[in-house]
Amino acid sequence: MLTDKFHAVLDYEGVVSVVTWTPVEPHITNTWNSYLTVTDDERILIPAAGFTHAEKDLAQNNQVLLTVGARDVEGRDGYQGTGFRLTGTAKFVDSGAEFEQVKAKYPFIRKVLEVTPTSAKQLL
Image (cartoon, rainbow, N blue to C red; front, side, top):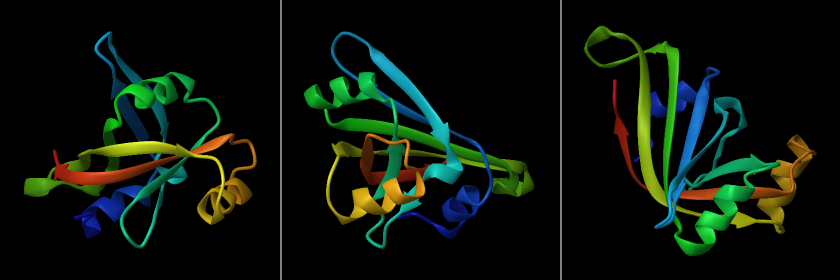
């Protein structure tokens, strides 16, 4: 599901938007492309120092939207830049081998946001 083009985007810096929501309101949290780790089974691990609002939302609704993009990766139809919208489920992890792996790289984190994509669409 996560194409070579998606992985190419992660090779460049760009903003990642993480959207969570409850019946009250949506919430957007941002991070950087370089912080994302894609596992062999295509889960995405995101170091979370803050993300407290997202954590409260996910306790009520585990659905999540992510956008990632990079201006330096050629998009569809030869346009400069491309981006992706992912939908999926998410949870916070604060123990285990993957948590320790991410924490070793980013010692400032308190948890890891684990996203399991169910769809990925190239937008540009």
